[in-house]
Length: 191
Ligand code: GAR
Image (tube, rainbow, N blue to C red; front, side, top):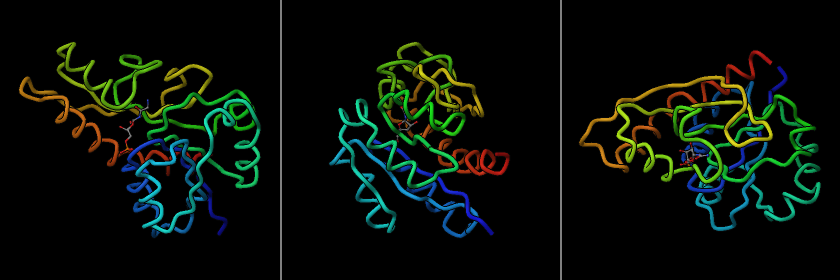
């Protein structure tokens, strides 16, 4: 059986990376080839170390201006590139080389609360400030604009008036952990 290969990009804590790694641990048909990060101090690197997953740091300016990361990716031959809490815009050279092979998870119900600067707690703060009664997650293909590619999957969760930003964040993370690995598996199965 030929194993499909995913490469994960992450910039922060990496709870999604760890959750995805657990999900695919006993599924030999899908392998995490590498985790790439633009943050040297990101907790995701500790998680990868503990989980024995290859991980690599890259420099942001080089990522945006050179083909270094592209060449690494070409060597890895990913079937899917997964942004799991990755906060930089994907440069055109990667979009050109991996059409319809890059997906992202966003912690809100797009098209609401997307775009530049809308990530992590900023999203949940805006949702709370707006008095929304529900929020959720959006998994979508990546194109040249932040959070605008075709939507693959959304899931919702209720917001109670008593919910603070931390509770909203926790509810959204729970949804991410339930849905993201399954959606990755589906996308790979159908590709
Ligand atoms: C996740 O909630 C993800 O949706 C969000 O960053 C968090 C990373 O959590 N991504 C964005 O905001 C992208 N715009 P994690 O590091 O615990 O996986």
